[in-house]
Length: 138
Image (cartoon, helix red, strand yellow):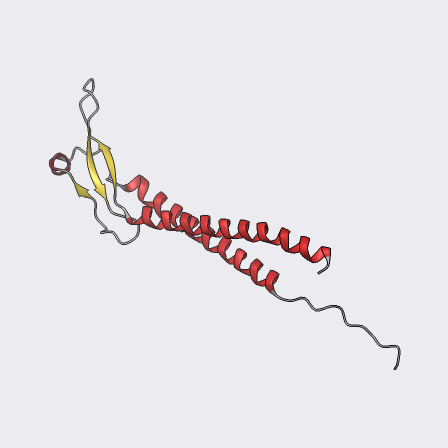
């Protein structure tokens, strides 16, 4: 067995391990992003109060970005404040679009990175043909 072959195999193993670790990290990151996008979150909406009064806010449970209802769920005090018209902004509004964009960008980046790794592995595993030789017997 040639020495070049043995050293080539020894250096290929750590490289394969690195590719495998990167792949596992990307898959785990994608799973965490997908899980994060399926969980509801809360939003504290400030109330309109008279000048000089302390600031007060009420909480809403906002729907998940993926697979959630389309309406926020108010707490008991938020329901009363909504009926009285004391809310200063719509609940969940400032974060909803940001969470959607962040989820889509993260999942697309993970998919692109995994695609690049798969393409790299396929190219690396294909046997290379030696260049064609010409015969001088012609």
